[in-house]
Each structure stands twice: as structure tokens, then as C-alpha cells.
Image 1 (cartoon, rainbow, N blue to C red):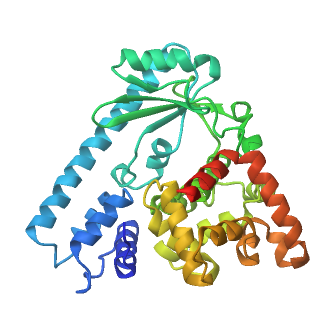
Image 2: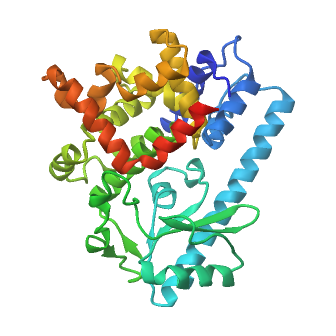
Length: 374
């Protein structure tokens, strides 16, 4: 999808106005409502855009507005169905004495002022390995189809058309991820819901760090959209005074996430509050804007190649591959902050990064090499 800068800037203003419950600025004349509508759908935040557009004096023409109202009604329906289904799944599985941990969007919805704002693609749950097939059987008794069971290392997928997809996770991060050590023993840190002892809950520190792990995983692999930054904003606003920041700040360096967390917070505040957009965040911001809600590997690679061509004049796949292996110091500093003080370590860290890719992300390396041969 081709992203126009003026459209993305106005789009962020609309989201900001919904978040802050303000009257948005009117649409500039050089922007088409069709582009705004498509962009909102691309990032799966069309409900927040709709809420902003409703407050405008100069609304879109009838054709566009009818499409927005139709999508709004669908979003309301999907949200109602998903939440009702989530409760039924939790009730049915826990009634069998099975412990289950709700994840991601289902929990994040509770932090949004309106659950409709936080659109979800699926319902995610974590279960212990020995309970996975039992829970899957319960889902099938509830009318779900086993679409992808035993094929993924980390989760099984069940669907119920037209709006429902459930992922039953056996682990939060696969062992190929560098920071899997943090989530491998998550069951030891969970606590039980007061009303239902088989519904497990993370403490908010773990939930915040898991959000970052999940955000960065998609960001570095296939891309992720603005919704992850909106999640970051609400996590900060709702939990800022409740989180143990000493613990989080102790964990971030161990995960090598100091820079990523700073960027996530910075973008959230720059886009949706009164924060300043720093120059080093402009590249990540552009990438997120171009990625859409879920991103694709092809989208990621295309964006990176266009960026190298624009900024460094690299026009060949061989040149692109070389630069990907030996990234410029400014980008390496994002993953290795120590370079800011010790630039002489760059060649050694190039080698470390290559070994890390081979050990922890060899599947992604294979995909990138395969795509370059096309």
C-alpha cells in the first residue's frame, strides 16, 4: 500500500483526538477521505478514526460516510461477539479444572476507555503443554475448527467463521527468540484471579515487558502497525503509577531493550501527547506507518531496500545484503547501545550480530536469502 505523508500525518491527528477526547482538526483539502479510510483499515484502527470523524463539521461525502458507518456497525458486532466468546471459552475451559492465561488484546481492551477502540484479530491464551489438546477439544465442542494444530512450535489455531480465531499458546516466546529465557518460567510468576481460581493473570510488570517482547518481535521480523504504539500509550497512562519501574529498568538492559522501550514510549508521547519527536525515532516511525496492522516480511524487506536506495544509493540485491549484514553504526547502536561510548567495538559486534542471527533467527535469515534470489 502506498502511504502518502500528508495522509499519515492527518491520520495520526485523528487518532490523537480520539485518545484525548478532543475535537479533531478539519481535513486538509489535499487529502482524500478514501485514502484516510483505507489507511485506517490497513492499521485496523478504523473505529478510533470513525469516532474522530463523527466530531467533524465537514464530514465525508455520503458514499464514504456510509462505508464508515457500515464498518463501525461491524466493529461493534465483532467486539461484542469476541468478548462474549472469550468469556464462554474461559468459563468452559476453567470448568474442567484447566488453568488458562488470557493474553494480548483481550487484556489490553480493559485499559482502553472503550473496548471497541482496541480491535482484535484473534483471541490468545496460554496453557500448559499437557492441557493444550484438552482445551482444543473443548473449542471443537464449542463449534471451532482445528485449522493449524501441531504445526506451529508455539501455538495451535482454531477458527469459527466469520469473526473468530483462537490461538492456544504452549509458550509465550519460541526458544529461537533471544529473550525466551524471560518467559520460559512465566507460570511460576502468575497469580490466580480472585473470582475464578483457574484464570491466571500476569503482574503488570510482566505484562508490560511481554508487550515490549511481542511488539519488538513483530517490529524486527515482519513489521507492526500503529496499534502497538497506541497500546504502549495506554499502558503508560493507565499503569505508570502502578508499575515497579525499578524492576522494569533492571530487566530492560538484560533483554537489550533499553533503546526499544525508549523509542516505544517516545513515539507514543510524540504522536498522542505532548512529547517531542526525536530524529532517531523518525526511521522507526516511518517503518511502523508503512507496515500496517500485522506487517509482512515482503513489506519489511521492500521498505528497507527503498530506504537504503534513498539514503545510501544502494541499488543491487548484493549491495542490500552486504549492508544488512554490516549495518551502519547508527542503526547498530539501536541494538548495541554500548557503541555510543565505544565505537571501536563495531566490527566485533557485526560478528556477534551475525552469530546471533544464525543461532536465534535462522528461519528469518533463510526467508531473507530466499526472497533475495527471486
